Every structure is written in structure tokens, then in C-alpha cells.
Image 1 (tube, rainbow, N blue to C red):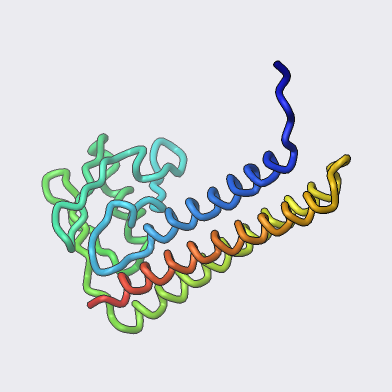
Image 2 (cartoon, rainbow, N blue to C red):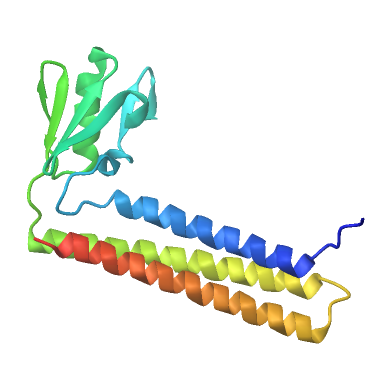
Length: 188
């Protein structure tokens, strides 16, 4: 039995994978934006000067969210407490970590209306970058489609239509993620 190669199906699968990767990346970026409640993802972007280089916080400490308005950071090496505090302060000027017996507590102050609106703008900017990445994946797939030989015009049009449908679905999904995050941020 010989396997039949499906270049059009492969093209669509590859485009879908690129689009889904862009959405997943945006979803992760959205989780780093502060809303009303504590989540360990808020500190994902924190960099700490440790052992002569900058490292992600999660490589030098464990982060937990024991309460809705509190994060705790437990350094694996107690000598890094000051560096971790500094990294947290520099990542978000609104955060003021406090150390108690080797445990760093990061209380999350309530967000002002103005700060919430700023965060919503950041989310919209991130979402637009995701939409651009999705459109770019579509463009790359269309360029690849033009290079495929021995494909009927009908199949080419059908694939082009499927590609546009896939793009529209993914952009709609991004819009839904944005709406949910915006609602979460604006919730008092």
C-alpha cells in the first residue's frame, strides 16, 4: 500500500499550527497582565540577577498564590532574597515585596480605574500582535499554495477558502480571549 501525499492538507495543518501557537503565546502573555486577583503568572516575566547573570524568577524560587490578593515567593537560595525583591519591584512599580523569615510576600494593591484602563490597552496591543501573527501565517500558507504544482484550480480555491475560514475562526477566538481578559481586568 502506498501513501498518498496531501500537500493541501499539510498546508492547512501547518497554518493551523502556526496560528494556534500565536494564540497560545498571547494567552500566556495575557496571564502576565494584572487583574483583580493574584495569579503566579504575574511574576513570570520577572528577571533576577543571580550567580552573575539574569535568570527568570521561576528558576531561583517557587511562587504561590495563597490568597486572592497575595503572592508568596520562596527562594531556593536564601542569599538571593534581596535580588528577588529588587527584580519584583523593577518588573512592576506597583508591587512592594516584604520579606519575613526567608519568605517574600507580595501583596497586590487594588487597581485604580486609570491603571485598569492602561492594562486593557496593553491587552489590546498584545491581541493585535497576535492577529498580525495569524494573518502572517495565512500569508505564508497562501504563498506556499502558489508554489504547489499539479493542483486543480478548484482545489486551490477551496484551500484558499478554507485558509480564510481558519483565519477568521482564530481571530474570533483572539477577540473572545480579549473580551474575557478585559472583563476580568475591569471587574472591581
